[in-house]
Image (cartoon, rainbow, N blue to C red; front, side, top):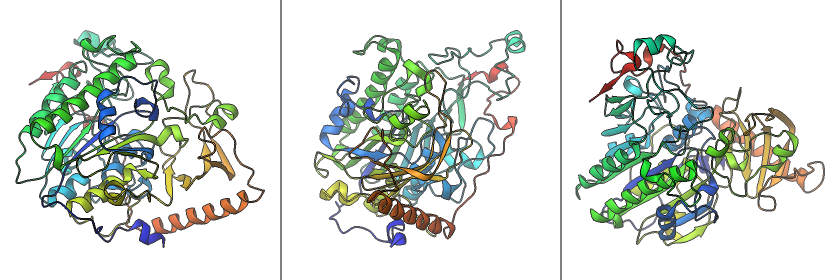
Length: 512
């Protein structure tokens, strides 16, 4: 039964259009469920995303594949959890490797099927040689190789604590602990295909350039070849930078809200470009995020809406967002629009970013990568036929929190959720958040208690029976993983692996 769910070996029997659809995948960073106005009425900075949601499906129960950057992106592009791919925590600028080469990305799958492929934005799956996005299925790449706080810039923007700017002379370098820090930090680079064209990148103008490159990519597409465009925003990760024209332009007039407004404007440019180039009716647009807000960044973080994880706050005083498997850590906005094909509605189906690759495979009639199991499922029946049949179960890895490496310590099945591990993430005041193991695990009913405030007594009926069924299911999942074609990611580091356009120049400065 489990293998039938995990292995997609068939294509759905819906009526396809004559031409395969184009795909635009939009991926926000550190973006909370409540950072979408259509989800949370106090958010006023997402008019373009709200309009996109009104034209397609807005999912209320959509989940990232992990609760931190790299594992979430690996799951998005492979349809597999980190425990299968080996990608369980973040790569950094000194990482020699990346997403294992025997794992197939969505871009590689679609390119093999005849698609034109392009990526704009944050990669974070390995920047060297074969691990660079140009060598992982993308014909075109314009963006940064990892998070925007993993390298200095001349205008550091807003972060807590504030970062120092890059050194501009050898004297600055010698006096700067930043440049010679243990992390081996160099200036943050901007790539165009395989070439670094700016180091350090100007983060204030980066979104404007993303808009230009997205419009250029879409304008150059031809009717005889479908395309896949993946846009991975730097927003809302810290440091938060935006074009000065967005300063105090938001309703809330905060740095976070102004930056959110700029990100939303990029979505608007992409949607307008699709319309102007006559691509709207044959293009599926999918928007979601990699993980929830980064609570320790205080006023520079977003909101998880009602998903507050109150048990954690009462018992450990920790964060319940990024780095955790509380709902605020991985429950994300989810929007899928395809005019004329997807009926506008709100869906409560349990779905995930893991579903992108299997669904694109089905819609594009592109064979799935062979000899492996998938944690994502094809949800084309949900998108096109109005079905509410999403995942029967969904496992959440504990990747991200200190000392935790991707174990499946949390499981959803219907309205039920069990958690073997809690804690591991700091709130704004950096206190609390101690990691706690639970045996038996905590049990919550998400429908009745979306704030996860009260763990149910698993010694009493019917909760004891629910727990027994979920523990058995988790055991079956682990058995399937043991039989799967799993890989191990290499996290070895070397300071010479850091991207540098001119190693003899202070902070690797260059502009092309």
